[in-house]
Length: 288
Ligand SMILES: [Zn+2]
Image (cartoon, rainbow, N blue to C red; front, side):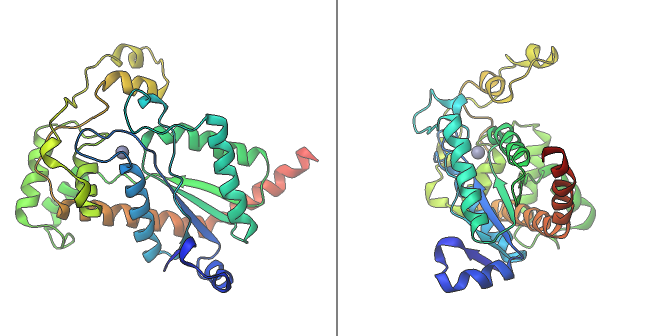
C-alpha cells in the first residue's frame, strides 16, 4: 500500500508505520541536463514514480524526494542544481532523523542517478559510524533490455502485457545496433514517456551527440578513478544515448520491472533488518 508522507493526516501516522512495518522510502535523483529531449528533473521524476509504484506492491510510506543529489560534474550545464557537499550530507541526515523520530526504523533510498552512488555509500557509512537507531540502505533499480529481450525470446510476450510485437522489434534493433544507453538514453527516455510524456521532446533526442568519445579510457585502463568526473569527460555533451523511436509501452515495462525490483528490496530489508540491529549491538561494546 502506497502512503505518501505529505498526504497523511496526523492521526494516520501510527497506522502507516504499522502497515509499512516501519519502512520509509526516500526517492533521490538530481537536477541536470538529460540531452535536449528530457527535463532537468528527469531523475527525480523517475525515482518518485518507481518508489510510488513499488510501495503499491510492498507497503511503505514514501517521503518527499531528495531533489538535489550530486550533480557537480554537470555544473557547466543550465538547470543543474548543486548543494555544497557538506549541506547535502546534513540535509540527508536531517531527513533520516526526522523520519526515525516518528518511529520508522528502516529507511530506503530509491536512487535514479548514477552520480549519487558515491554519495549514498559515503553517507550511509557515516550513519553506521554514528550508530544510529535506524537502518538506512539504498537501491538503484536498472532493468536491462538484454534480459527483457532474452526472456521474451524464450517465453514469449505473455509476461509483458504492456508490449506490442512491434515494440520487441524496437528493443531488438537497439540491442543489435549496440547503441549507447546511459544518461538520457533509450531506458530513461522510454521511462519518461511512461511517466511524464508531456515533458519529452523525442524530436530533440539526436540534437547533441551522445556517443562516448573514449577520452576517459586510458584513465580507466590505468585504474584511475573518480567516477563522475571521468564519466563527464567521456560524454562531453552530458548525454549518453542515441536517437531511437521508443514509446510509453516500453517505458511501462521498465517502470514495472523497476518497481518490482524495489518492492523486493523493501521486502528483503524488512525481513533482514535485525541483522543490522544485532551488528550495531555487538559493535557498541567497542565504543563505550
Ligand atoms: Zn538520469
